[in-house]
Image (tube, rainbow, N blue to C red; front, side):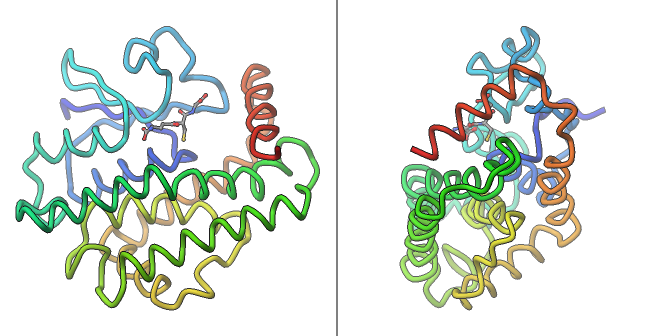
Length: 242
Ligand SMILES: N[C@@H](CCC(=O)N[C@@H](CS)C(=O)NCC(=O)O)C(=O)O
């Protein structure tokens, strides 16, 4: 029985990053699905695992923690995963850190906004989003994609070099959520499209599909959304539609 437990909802891109990494690097763990739509992260039990009541969370014996990047670092240190995920070479590692810092502070808000406007707004409100707002979010997303392709990837196979790292996994787990919104985000970015394929193969094509199916299926689970979460979803849609 694995000693490490992860608490994840595949709808969440930070969870997908942790899941892709843990599975691809063959870490033994118990997967506990926490359904955000049902408000399972708001329970007292989950609050003990992560007081900020966000997924993902990790439990290792009596030790518990949240925050996806920190969870990935914990798993890397505990399981001494292959070096390419987070290279021990000072400067290669710094490149991974650089990408992760940029992704968290700059890319994630744009990918999240586009996902909420394009995929979640029709699901929550029954209406398409205002086209101007959607266009602005698409422009922001294109700026992010251009930066990933031209600033970080350039002509390398992966974001920081010749081998897949946690930077690739975190980036793809996040950007790929826009694909289920019916957007063909990689069409205008041939290098990113080829990179996506390489990361998918490194992570496992089936694993990748399984994780994205989680989002696609989410929108079919309307009846399971708790009243509290319906209100929260509405508030989030309003926030991103401002
Ligand atoms: N910085 C955190 C973000 C975690 C986060 O925002 N999780 C979202 C899902 S993507 C969540 O649990 N939301 C539940 C809520 O706010 O009610 C991480 O990287 O783990």
